[in-house]
Amino acid sequence: MSDRVEKFVYVGEKAERLDKFLVSRFAEFSRARLQGLIADGFVSVNGAPAKKAGQSIESGTEIEVRVPPPVPTGLVGEDIPLDIIFENDDLLIVNKPAGMVVHPAAGHNSGTLVHAVLGYDPEMEGIGGEERPGLVHRLDKETSGLIILAKNERAHRWLQDQFRLRKVEKTYLALVDGKPPTPTGRVEASIGRDPGHRKKMAIVQAGKGREAVSEYKTLESFKDHTLLEFHPHTGRTHQIRLHCQFLGCPIVGDAIYGRKNPTVEINRHFLHAARLKIVLTNEKQPRVFDAELPEELKKVLEEVRG
Image 1 (cartoon, rainbow, N blue to C red):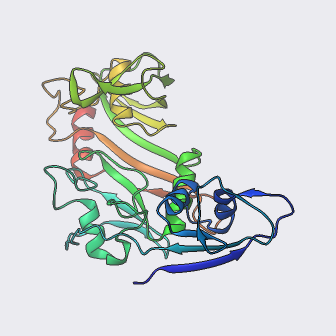
Image 2 (cartoon, rainbow, N blue to C red):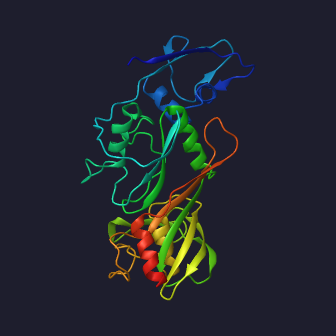
Image 3 (cartoon, rainbow, N blue to C red):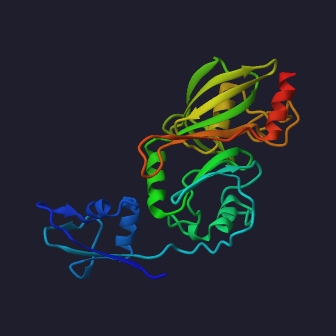
């Protein structure tokens, strides 16, 4: 696949930053991506390599941009069944099962969601210029439910903006031990790395981690458990699991942030990404996508209902 070449002539009345002008011409790319192309020598101004992203251009300036094809990830697609909730030319929405890792990492070189997606659609390789084709958010290994992936650069940028601007409404279902202090509430508790355990996250003092905000409401109350609906407003690693721990009602089956001995028979934590509300590319009104609770979680609910 050869480079894509685009040529422009700037005709503005006032001088303009090069990167700002390019953002207006490449809606599918972030400014950071375009700044990277400039730094790597893929942009020329009046026939000479651009000096810097903030270079000033004036009316009549000729600009050429070479966009290299997506960098191959070296990943090999695998024939793994996918529960596809929705698909169009721009994106996939998949109902991920518990136990499936989202993207390759140390100890997970095969069998991931990314491997499955590349097996389904090899053209998604390299979307986003990363080794995580099409991903704009993630779910923990043991969390089931909805995850969305972009199938092209324009959709990837669109989805990134939707998540960054907090326009995506995500709904999770969590069965917890005990009950929260109030039936409904809002948690504002910053999250950062646990200083004592490199692979764990922790609630930290404001200013020492990243802002994390969740809202919750009680759906059902049981003798020793509560079914909660969570709406995270930020997307921090392990956010809902940590916020449940912070509320004093850890998620059932959470081997890291919950009780050492599960209070019900379960081989995963009870957290499910049940709903996504999002405005899709080329549309104005949001759509809602749902994923039912997996059978193993339905059985746990039946057990606690008695």
